[in-house]
Length: 166
Image 1 (tube, one colour):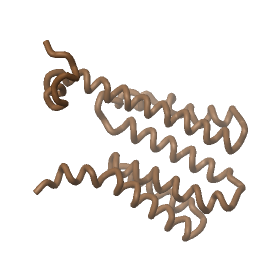
Image 2: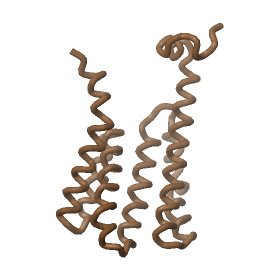
Image 3: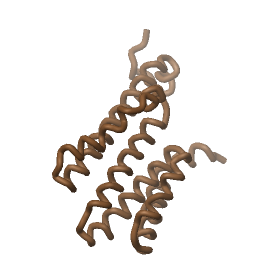
Image 4: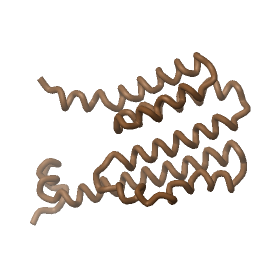
Protein backbone atom coordinates (compact mmCIF):
# COMPACT_ATOMS: atom_id res chain seq x y z
CA UNK A 1 0.00 0.00 0.00
CA UNK A 2 1.50 3.29 -1.09
CA UNK A 3 1.21 6.53 0.78
CA UNK A 4 -0.35 9.43 -1.11
CA UNK A 5 2.36 11.76 -2.30
CA UNK A 6 5.26 9.32 -2.72
CA UNK A 7 4.83 8.70 -6.45
CA UNK A 8 4.35 11.26 -9.16
CA UNK A 9 0.98 12.99 -9.32
CA UNK A 10 -0.47 10.95 -12.20
CA UNK A 11 0.21 7.65 -10.46
CA UNK A 12 -1.22 8.96 -7.19
CA UNK A 13 -4.41 10.19 -8.85
CA UNK A 14 -4.93 6.93 -10.71
CA UNK A 15 -4.24 4.89 -7.59
CA UNK A 16 -6.65 6.75 -5.31
CA UNK A 17 -8.89 9.15 -7.25
CA UNK A 18 -11.45 9.51 -4.46
CA UNK A 19 -8.98 11.37 -2.26
CA UNK A 20 -8.28 13.90 -4.97
CA UNK A 21 -11.95 14.24 -5.94
CA UNK A 22 -12.90 14.87 -2.31
CA UNK A 23 -10.12 17.43 -1.97
CA UNK A 24 -11.22 19.28 -5.10
CA UNK A 25 -14.84 19.21 -3.94
CA UNK A 26 -13.84 20.62 -0.56
CA UNK A 27 -11.85 23.40 -2.22
CA UNK A 28 -14.83 24.28 -4.43
CA UNK A 29 -17.08 24.52 -1.37
CA UNK A 30 -14.52 26.76 0.34
CA UNK A 31 -14.47 29.05 -2.71
CA UNK A 32 -18.28 29.14 -2.67
CA UNK A 33 -18.31 30.05 1.02
CA UNK A 34 -15.63 32.69 0.48
CA UNK A 35 -17.72 34.23 -2.31
CA UNK A 36 -20.74 34.42 -0.01
CA UNK A 37 -18.60 36.08 2.68
CA UNK A 38 -17.04 38.59 0.28
CA UNK A 39 -20.46 39.48 -1.14
CA UNK A 40 -21.73 40.29 2.34
CA UNK A 41 -18.58 42.22 3.16
CA UNK A 42 -18.85 44.31 -0.03
CA UNK A 43 -22.44 45.30 0.75
CA UNK A 44 -21.61 46.06 4.38
CA UNK A 45 -18.69 48.22 3.29
CA UNK A 46 -20.88 50.28 0.96
CA UNK A 47 -23.99 50.56 3.14
CA UNK A 48 -22.70 50.11 6.72
CA UNK A 49 -25.86 48.09 7.39
CA UNK A 50 -25.51 44.54 8.64
CA UNK A 51 -29.06 43.51 7.67
CA UNK A 52 -28.41 44.35 4.00
CA UNK A 53 -25.13 42.44 4.07
CA UNK A 54 -26.92 39.40 5.47
CA UNK A 55 -29.74 39.82 2.97
CA UNK A 56 -27.37 39.56 -0.01
CA UNK A 57 -26.06 36.28 1.43
CA UNK A 58 -29.39 34.56 2.04
CA UNK A 59 -30.70 33.75 -1.49
CA UNK A 60 -28.15 30.97 -1.70
CA UNK A 61 -30.05 29.08 0.99
CA UNK A 62 -33.52 29.48 -0.56
CA UNK A 63 -32.93 27.01 -3.38
CA UNK A 64 -31.72 23.51 -2.57
CA UNK A 65 -30.52 22.94 -6.14
CA UNK A 66 -27.52 25.11 -5.26
CA UNK A 67 -26.33 22.37 -2.94
CA UNK A 68 -27.58 19.36 -4.88
CA UNK A 69 -25.55 20.25 -7.96
CA UNK A 70 -22.31 20.64 -6.04
CA UNK A 71 -20.75 17.35 -7.00
CA UNK A 72 -17.15 16.59 -6.06
CA UNK A 73 -15.78 17.91 -9.35
CA UNK A 74 -18.00 20.41 -11.13
CA UNK A 75 -17.62 24.01 -12.27
CA UNK A 76 -20.95 25.01 -10.75
CA UNK A 77 -19.53 25.85 -7.31
CA UNK A 78 -17.12 28.34 -8.83
CA UNK A 79 -19.80 29.63 -11.18
CA UNK A 80 -22.28 30.13 -8.33
CA UNK A 81 -19.62 32.03 -6.46
CA UNK A 82 -18.99 34.30 -9.44
CA UNK A 83 -22.73 34.97 -9.82
CA UNK A 84 -23.03 35.83 -6.11
CA UNK A 85 -20.08 38.21 -6.34
CA UNK A 86 -21.44 39.80 -9.53
CA UNK A 87 -24.81 40.32 -7.85
CA UNK A 88 -23.21 41.95 -4.84
CA UNK A 89 -21.05 44.07 -7.12
CA UNK A 90 -24.14 45.21 -9.05
CA UNK A 91 -25.88 46.22 -5.81
CA UNK A 92 -22.74 48.00 -4.59
CA UNK A 93 -22.48 49.78 -7.94
CA UNK A 94 -26.04 51.01 -7.64
CA UNK A 95 -25.47 52.27 -4.10
CA UNK A 96 -22.02 53.79 -4.64
CA UNK A 97 -22.01 57.59 -4.68
CA UNK A 98 -18.32 58.19 -5.51
CA UNK A 99 -18.20 58.88 -9.26
CA UNK A 100 -14.47 58.25 -9.59
CA UNK A 101 -14.85 54.83 -8.02
CA UNK A 102 -17.82 54.07 -10.26
CA UNK A 103 -15.75 54.92 -13.34
CA UNK A 104 -12.54 53.09 -12.38
CA UNK A 105 -13.13 50.18 -10.02
CA UNK A 106 -16.49 48.76 -11.00
CA UNK A 107 -15.97 48.23 -14.76
CA UNK A 108 -12.72 46.38 -14.15
CA UNK A 109 -14.21 44.33 -11.29
CA UNK A 110 -17.21 43.40 -13.45
CA UNK A 111 -14.81 42.48 -16.25
CA UNK A 112 -12.64 40.26 -14.07
CA UNK A 113 -15.71 38.44 -12.76
CA UNK A 114 -17.07 38.02 -16.30
CA UNK A 115 -13.75 36.60 -17.48
CA UNK A 116 -13.66 34.14 -14.60
CA UNK A 117 -17.29 33.17 -15.21
CA UNK A 118 -16.78 32.64 -18.94
CA UNK A 119 -13.57 30.69 -18.39
CA UNK A 120 -15.42 28.50 -15.90
CA UNK A 121 -18.45 27.76 -18.03
CA UNK A 122 -19.84 29.32 -21.20
CA UNK A 123 -23.35 29.35 -19.74
CA UNK A 124 -22.28 32.48 -17.85
CA UNK A 125 -22.56 34.47 -21.10
CA UNK A 126 -26.10 35.86 -20.51
CA UNK A 127 -25.03 37.13 -17.10
CA UNK A 128 -21.87 38.60 -18.64
CA UNK A 129 -23.98 40.85 -20.86
CA UNK A 130 -25.79 42.49 -17.93
CA UNK A 131 -22.90 44.74 -16.76
CA UNK A 132 -22.78 46.33 -20.21
CA UNK A 133 -26.37 47.45 -19.60
CA UNK A 134 -25.67 48.51 -16.02
CA UNK A 135 -22.55 50.60 -16.66
CA UNK A 136 -23.41 54.20 -17.42
CA UNK A 137 -20.66 55.20 -19.87
CA UNK A 138 -18.90 53.89 -22.95
CA UNK A 139 -15.58 54.20 -21.15
CA UNK A 140 -16.94 51.89 -18.45
CA UNK A 141 -18.14 49.38 -21.03
CA UNK A 142 -14.74 49.42 -22.76
CA UNK A 143 -13.03 48.93 -19.39
CA UNK A 144 -15.41 46.07 -18.69
CA UNK A 145 -14.70 44.39 -22.02
CA UNK A 146 -10.93 44.81 -21.58
CA UNK A 147 -11.08 43.40 -18.04
CA UNK A 148 -13.18 40.46 -19.20
CA UNK A 149 -10.87 39.75 -22.14
CA UNK A 150 -7.69 39.84 -20.06
CA UNK A 151 -9.20 37.77 -17.26
CA UNK A 152 -10.57 35.19 -19.69
CA UNK A 153 -7.24 34.97 -21.53
CA UNK A 154 -5.19 34.60 -18.35
CA UNK A 155 -7.42 31.78 -17.14
CA UNK A 156 -7.94 29.92 -20.40
CA UNK A 157 -4.69 30.21 -22.38
CA UNK A 158 -2.83 27.71 -20.13
CA UNK A 159 -5.64 25.25 -20.80
CA UNK A 160 -5.38 25.74 -24.56
CA UNK A 161 -1.78 24.57 -24.45
CA UNK A 162 -2.86 21.20 -23.06
CA UNK A 163 -5.86 20.77 -25.34
CA UNK A 164 -4.36 21.85 -28.65
CA UNK A 165 -1.04 20.04 -28.62
CA UNK A 166 0.47 19.57 -32.04
